[in-house]
Length: 301
Ligand code: ARG
Ligand code: MN
Ligand code: MN
Ligand code: MN
Image (cartoon, rainbow, N blue to C red):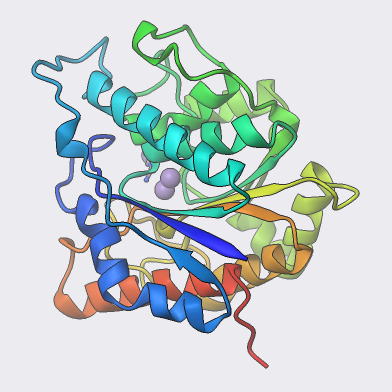
């Protein structure tokens, strides 16, 4: 029962400053003692120092922004997450922007090739270098993991280890046209907010797990983008989209994943303490900590 906190103060996958401070705020809010109270041994030897990763010149490749930086950082994260997983620890990665999931999921799959990924987000983050309109790599990590789109030499270290049937989304509501086509063409299972409204979150989580983990025997990597939550619940994030998950729906997902006993890795991404007011920041950081606690065994009774 050991967790390894992987603090990733990184913002290079998107343009807004401040998301690099997310992990610092989460830890300062008391995350580590909170997880220890749940009975975990928690390893944390400080946030990663990505300043050491020196990229003198990083002009766009096509329209992809900061490609060398993002590649180097996510590669380092893959290494660290893979090492923790190999020791039987659960890596808990605190972002930072969601491009980091290229690293975390690569790390998980290096140890558990049959792991499934449950991706909770307003966005699909599955743009390729052909479809991205923003050039922000936090909108692209899933396509790299699946090996979709034309290869970008800089990211050749990312092995396409994830198969479409190993992936499921919950919470989507801002999916670009190019991404919709990718989801359809590759038969990727996604439960948007429409399905959450229609079936309720309990049924949606059950259907999601039935898809990626029908026998409930495969390891699970949960990647949670805090913008999956409604902006009234988690306001301090770079790309908020209205009509999101309620506080309880978000927590229910985490509780249900914990209950499977199959969780091997966990990400919490896109908390940006520079956005909105002080109260919003406090609220978003607190909700981030509480989602993590729910995914790691906190129960209501
Ligand atoms: N689809 C948009 C893009 O490609 C938004 C992505 C937002 N991603 C995120 N991790 N918050 O830029
Ligand atoms: Mn998002
Ligand atoms: Mn959009
Ligand atoms: Mn995301």
